[in-house]
Length: 49
Image (cartoon, rainbow, N blue to C red; front, side, top):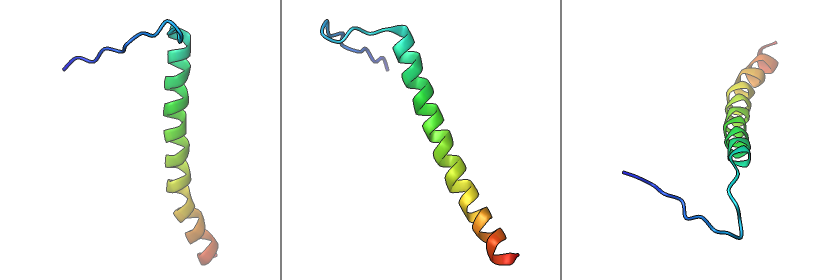
């Protein structure tokens, strides 16, 4: 399966912008994983002690 993006001259594609978008996407998933993973642990600690 191959995917090709259609280039639009109105919106030029820059490699740096693409890397930054990838970085923001990965970091947002990491942030949500940390929040969802730590909140039950912190709630348990607060309830138990």
